[in-house]
Image: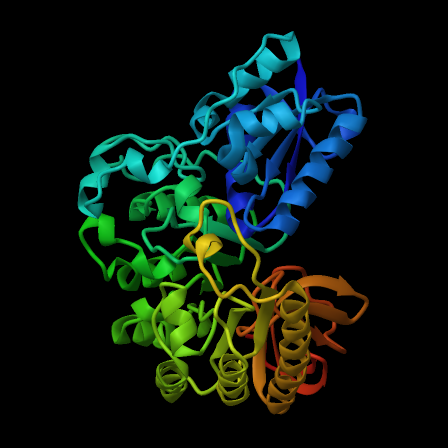
Length: 468
């Protein structure tokens, strides 16, 4: 019997990969994936549970899906994190599933359509499911979203990816690992995503080749912590060896790495990312703050001088390298002097893009129990203050790029105007470059252009005679 499902994804690029794995499993089980929830037998909502606003968006999306009259199934981080509690508080969802259900997702949806009750899981700390020693984890066959069917022991070479693209376009995320071993005081992700687990290089090369066959030109490598890639496979520098191989996949024009931990950056990785043809000199560095005392309370490392030194090392090798980060303001114990230190770093760092977030307590985190809480109205004022500074500084950084030659991966075309991303611009989170008078490039082409102007952090450019 023909069955159809619509997959709705919330949250980050990692969730997008997980949704495409779920879609791949469902198509393999005979389900037809459709875009319109109103035209589906079931709606699968891949939720986000990172912060309070993301939880609210997930709940609202589940309720909207229920309004269609279709069967609604919750998966993803919010579902994994709250399980039976979410099922009890949100009866509009016909089922709340765990990551452990992904391998049988087709059968689970069959149960939902047939009206067979599913007992929701009780959440557990997924870090306890794997050995503490990273190198011992490959011997355990534990489901990891976005990894496909991960067997215990060595993976077979170049197996067919278990993935179905839900969105077209020349850019796609490639998940290189899941989970995190860090213990940042504000973050709940390790508890429900589990310990750090790398994917085998052969799996990644096979999926990259498949994505290239789907028209993908840029790979965005995602994980909770990309700088840790390979540590559980016995090679902490495996990312340095993987990047040239991915860049050499036929059809791939650019490989971009995201989610880099400043404390784990090493000279060999900087060298590969700034010198390998096809690898973007783009550094998505998770600074979170710049005040040493605040970072210590966050269970993180570094300070203004260390971070500026890292940026200087990068720019010594690649003066035009892109750099972005996220910062949290209002963390417990943060003082006016700490905010001033953050401002000093941002002013000196010349970052291309910065996300500014106000701190809020998260269930099960160390920070939720810390003293020295900053008043909510004060947090709001600091977010506004830092946000306005960031807007000014990143606009100035964009203006510094006037006159630079950039290679723009075209994502859309309107007449003779093309819009896409330069090497320092990641999809979704950074700015765009508009090439005026581009002629008639196709989506997926790379156009070489000279920057002539800016609009905020966005660039305006004109094409050069030679195509990249």
